[in-house]
Image (cartoon, rainbow, N blue to C red; front, side, top):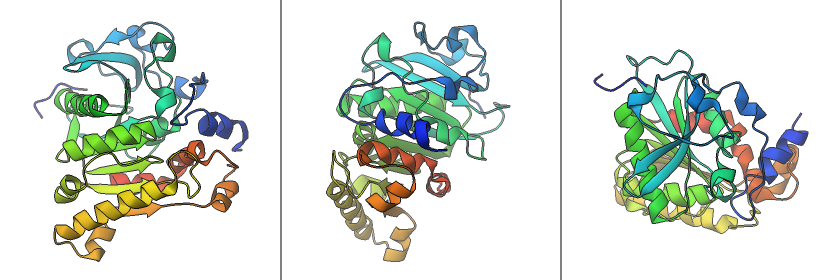
Length: 296
């Protein structure tokens, strides 16, 4: 192609209670990401200053390239990304845009890289299929972040070996508010979207008209948004799909919702804080595989 090459105990406490989409950010142990960090000197310093991005100065090493900046039309976009082992510019890879919640947004240098140990980022790197994974730290969860998500997606499509028929989005909490907007603004970019523990701020009709597959995950007793917001999103998307002339069977292949109850969470080691606990969705391989099974 013509592009430039490019147990549950303590772990659950870190994963489920810190990365919530609201309240104050907590420092996160980055050790789980250490084994994936790439080897270029200017990219591996997790606590140093960010480096300006650009395919022209990247040698496309496998692993995580941490704390980059894309100077976009709407301002600086802070992000990190993962390239699979043996990344080959002559091949095409699925691309996942994974956007975290409020606690891992950009609040200045002290917050830089706080998304690197987030399961919503790392889980995609552990799937059997090799793929490119990007996680950004935006400064809001509205129009600006949505347009930055689109701009970052296009940057990777243009500069890395991306299969344009297999570009996926994943947004948790505040990141879900952002990505529901981004996916509805540019549904031509994304084949499927995982909407985790969030409210839908985007349009329904554009998503349905472009056959974007959507999986909605929300705790039945989510303390922050409440599960009704997930139900409303499902109902709105279902009606939009119906309006395109699709049958209920066809919609079932494109739209899913899962509202696990407290018992289900308890069986998985989560008791209370079900909003933060919704990060357990990223441990469900069948859910992740449903997302990446779709193509444009």
